[in-house]
Length: 95
View 1 (cartoon, rainbow, N blue to C red):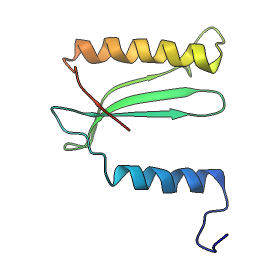
View 2 (cartoon, one colour):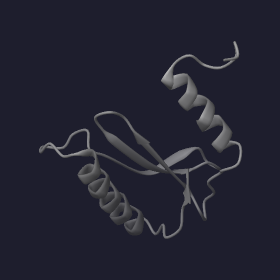
View 3 (tube, rainbow, N blue to C red):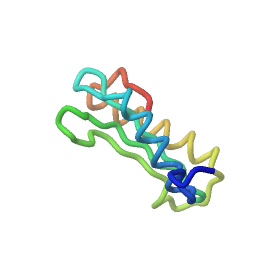
View 4 (tube, rainbow, N blue to C red):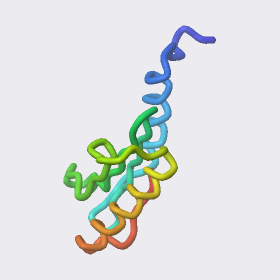
């Protein structure tokens, strides 16, 4: 392993994220959908990179009932799709 290779999981994730973000950019017409999964929670947000603004976000962090990650992901997907359609967002770039 090279000395420049990150030693932690978060360092490796940051490296992957920078590599992807070099190619993927959200615009006002087609914002970026960023999804992050931790060991306990799922987060999703729709971002307009031109203005640097989060348009819609969803998470299962404040959920009243305990769900598996798969169930939580389905719920987050449905809630972010509903919120996006209410704001008139029909197409996104997946990050």
